[in-house]
Length: 179
Image 1 (cartoon, rainbow, N blue to C red):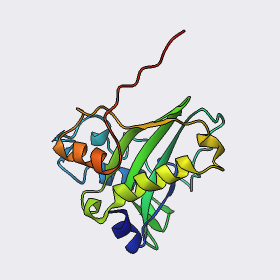
Image 2 (image 1 turned 180 degrees about the vertical axis):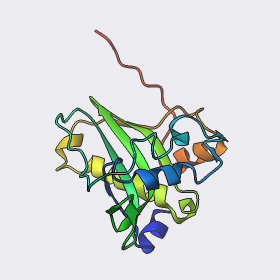
Image 3 (image 1 turned 30 degrees about the horizontal axis):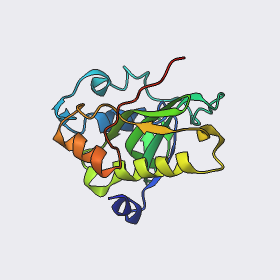
């Protein structure tokens, strides 16, 4: 699936969610249901609910602590002239994954792809590039990470369970010993 996205020229990078708020909302609302159920929570937010369109270009946030941070990765399609409000960004966000680190654990707190592009592998592309980024020996932000987690095995419907399985996630019990 990732190779489809690559063949289409899509790229993955970190980004500031406040810059791509219009595309973010469009992705969230591109399907009537997510994870086997009706849209709920943040997936129903409007551009205004998310703070409105940006007034200027916004760089991704840079974590200040190597062991406690959050960042957002996205799969992008080059699209000259594409805007977010009045800010020209020249690319369209097609999928995003919010990644958080707490100690030796990285967690996907949200994964969403535009319904019209999921069969193009945009979510898989984003996921596998994140895994590559986490495993890169030179990456100081991920040194010491032992686990990448995405929700419980029972969370979501059959489609989400299939995605987790084909993305390399396996069911586990995480127990931290307290001494």
